[in-house]
Image (cartoon, rainbow, N blue to C red; front, side, top):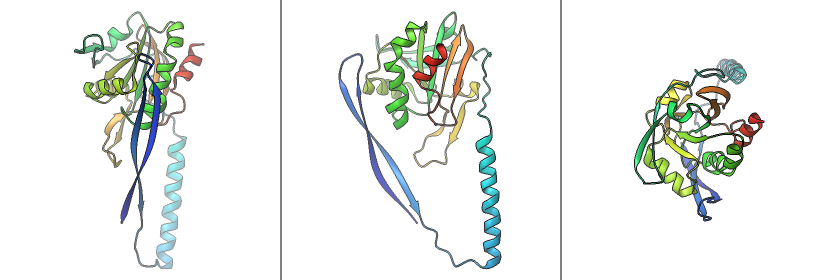
Length: 233
């Protein structure tokens, strides 16, 4: 039997462009379950204990595995077409990875989903706040990538007041995400995310990856704007 309780996390962020403060709320679900079963006999308890130990060993092995992707430092970024609404004229446009990175120092950071708590409260706002510092270190392209459609990315930009200097790019068909080997399947989660991108931040110079901070799934430990500034020196 399962019960669901709804809690709310709030975000208050200041729009760098308009000087307006937005407060966003994010619902999260907490699930609890209780299994009803007859008392286990000695033999069943022994088998259950052995199975539990095997599961613990598998989890420990998995946690010790390196975080890997198709792309690596020193590789040329695969080309892919991304879409966005141009804030200058409101028109839907497309841009390729090659156009974003050719002859430039570019920072691309990916999030598992627009409007999700960590992405909206920490990851994206961090890059917005440190955009000027990144530009001072020679970064010409600063772009947020997510497996959401361009309409969602536009709404997210407007809700957080993201300035024009940070591109909000839709990888709705996972073209770039799959080419990088950064996809993750969240179909078993109750919020309906499906297949999304793992969180990462990368620095590319003329299309060649110089820094790759790839997270374990949606974790947020090494892909912040601060981490990228430290890598830039």
